[in-house]
Image 1 (tube, rainbow, N blue to C red):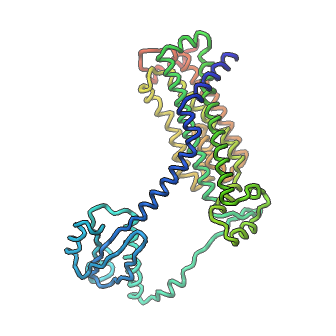
Image 2 (spheres, rainbow, N blue to C red; image 1 turned 180 degrees about the vertical axis):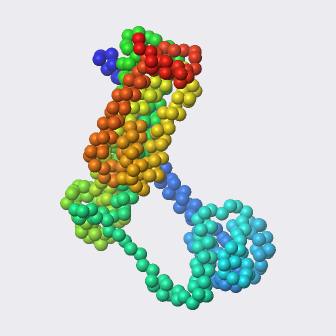
Image 3 (tube, rainbow, N blue to C red; image 1 turned 135 degrees about the vertical axis):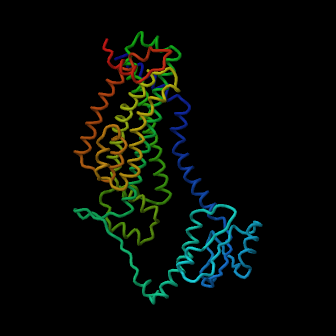
Length: 440
């Protein structure tokens, strides 16, 4: 046990002293915020650039009122100049493009005959805006042609805003469901990144020691299984430390945000906050960001955090065992690629199932199955928990994950104890099967 403790300490200290680990721990939250702010800034900067679009209306159906300027697009009437002269001006670089509405016999034909000319490929938002203007006018003309009253049709439009309540009468909103989906995605992505980053670091550490022949000295005084477990637990402990420090930093940032926006976090987290109080706050002009923070603190954050720790440890131990076995089986990182693919596939599957299935239907059969399947449950179950999952489902998922981990540890240890001293030959799946069956 003392030798295992020494190995864990060695791996942990080596990991936390690594410059990359330190940078990722302290700067990652700031870099993520900075990247988000940069994306918003660049988006606004891009939208602030005004594009000039010329239009030539040979149909005679459109007017300046139909081509009103927006924040990003300015429309210029070149109908009197004609299409060819307008195209020449645009080619000279004076405007971004020209839209041409030909003279045709009916509205259906006009809808299919509109043309747009430009040097550069227009963006999707620009084309959607142009099509919206064209379609709006054509729709109004078609209604008149059919004898329909446009004003009455506008007056008949009405939209619903469904109130979400559970059977205890607690009211929620669409915003809460969106936050649950976003929080589930965030935890799933974080776990995926942690397993990949820290799991592959175990593999690289083993390959490095194997190629430098240091491992031959180490295994002369400690059993290969203890060495493997020491590396996994040591790297996992460093990962948990990084996770805790991220949580502390995010908590500090939330306190700074609350003081900046004037929100009482104690009152927000209290179970006594009622829907009436929130409605009153809205009536007093509370900013939308404050409402979002109110909804975030109503989510089961403590439960999600504790289960995140469990699934992080379980998922990390499960996949790190496989990464350790791969590291022991090969002599260099290039040879590991043939074995990495089958290990990576369940992780990628869990990520994509969570992204496209769980967010839309957290209690559907696909989401339920993959939240119980041990190779994907660390990601999928974390995505489902914000939407409310029964404890018996969570316990089944946790039990299956633990049992699968024990089996994988046994499986990986068989490969590790033989492969750790194998050199010079690129192993195959047949070789791995022989090592598993090796019993002495």
